[in-house]
Image (cartoon, rainbow, N blue to C red; front, side):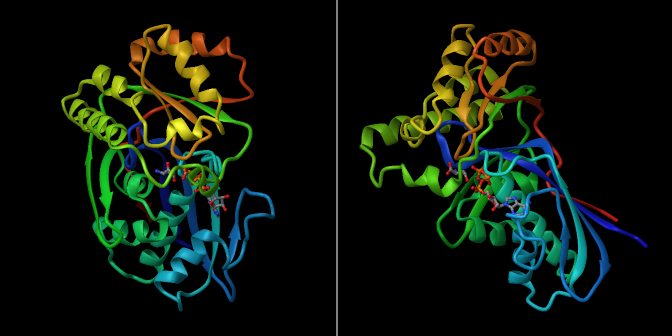
Length: 291
Ligand SMILES: Nc1ncnc2c1ncn2[C@@H]1O[C@H](COP(=O)(O)OP(=O)(O)OP(=O)(O)O)[C@@H](O)[C@H]1O
Ligand SMILES: N[C@@H](CCO)C(=O)O
């Protein structure tokens, strides 16, 4: 039997001041195998019983939202993207679900069409866009239409701290204020603009400096993720910038020039934080399907 395999990368959103707009794809993956047709949907998956294995599963639910009479199949999911840690697990599941409907329903969706559907489901584009396109993505969503531009990211390593405890995006968004002083918004949006321009020019050093200039969300989320300040401080003492709260947290990511990686790894080790350290690369492929 020929098996179709869908692969979606992890993503890291915001990069500091690019709140709800900028994201990158990373080389952790959710993989979904479409096995045999059967009477009811069945997901063989690596999670605890909290994540449903039937049609209530987020991936299947997403596919059925697109095509309600999609024929049920046995699906096998494997993933090394941690759940609710700020590495885009829900976006990877949503994108996998859209592709599942695309494959089984023969919809022939373009990436642009997949993006529009995914953004409406996720509510913001900064995870779903890089999950589809790969690389570095700058996007906007006005509640109706998403626009996204992807571009290569300069050579860098992502030094990633994944805390032991989960932080749901809904909880992390609940601490944000409804309004911001204009001067903070101007300082942050101008830093985001320079960040994008620096990435497009291949200037990692300037881009990473801008990653520390957020005043949209990190100030308020810091109370939920005290590791952010500790990691940023110890790395800045070594002259390494580029530390930010990945997505809604609690993961803290630092974009490091390859030649500074060893120094950065040594510096953060002394913090002895409870959690996992990963060194990742930017994924350039985005959503992939093999048959
Ligand atoms: N592969 C999956 N299958 C089913 N449900 C999933 C899957 N991945 C994520 N989810 C659901 O999404 C929730 C996590 O979503 P949430 O938006 O809080 O975090 P995240 O996407 O990992 O982080 P962030 O959006 O900050 O990058 C999980 O608790 C689970 O309910
Ligand atoms: N931009 C989003 C990403 C997480 O889903 C946030 O920071 O809440």
